[in-house]
Length: 324
Ligand SMILES: [Zn+2]
Ligand SMILES: [Zn+2]
Image 1 (spheres, protein in one colour):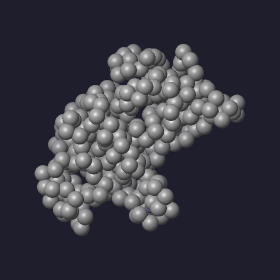
Image 2 (tube, protein in one colour):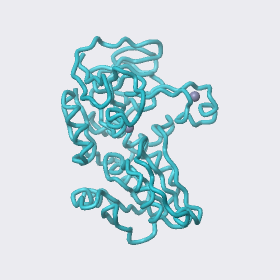
Image 3 (cartoon, helix red, strand yellow):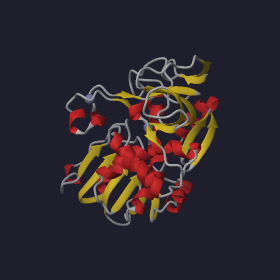
Image 4 (tube, helix red, strand yellow):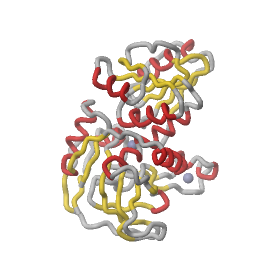
């Protein structure tokens, strides 16, 4: 089978022929139908996340067909594989319904091989059933952009006026969910990105502008999906008393110093780490009920380096998806 393989961080992926992986007990062998590209993949490639397994197959938004293995899924079933690949089930986090924080967690496309390949294996307990309303191309971005975006939205509580910084793959899905929940959405893009702002308005944002501008009114919460630390300060300025700022990425540049008065008034800043299976179950149920518009750009598997380059350059609208 063909795979795009990372041998060394900060070097391009290489297209290689590899033997079909053999599923162990409780694992399924999947024929990959599509795999969406996440900013986390870029952080791994660029060396911003340390110590990946090497060589490594990236990719943790995998739509695949079960070929064999395990007992949970019948051969031929279409499943989704997310970032969370395995948890210990024993640590204090696993035992308190916070498996996303598991001390020994393993992650797809980081600690174990992922979906930039024609075939992959996954622990059957961490695979999700996927709603039929989405074809392979459009289901893939639900698995991280959607899922982790949803967790970020949940951590924003019942905020009515919601700011979203960085209008890419996660934001474009979560803006639609937020609208569906009756919230008001304010979108912040790169300054001068008129196309991105138009896209945000199309998806239900009532206001869209550059991240260097202030919203027309105070916000109750803000989600940050761009890896830029200064946005934390901008978002704190934009939220009112009691407001929450949620950072949704796994890596961010340093947050500049800011005056305490921006945090005063019971404002809070928090991050979102990984996902729990419950987030996936909840979000995919919503995605099955509300037909989300999923904006994708299709790339052949062998074009993975180009897809990653465009993500780094901010040249994508929606999510890049690799199709073997
Ligand atoms: Zn991801
Ligand atoms: Zn654990």
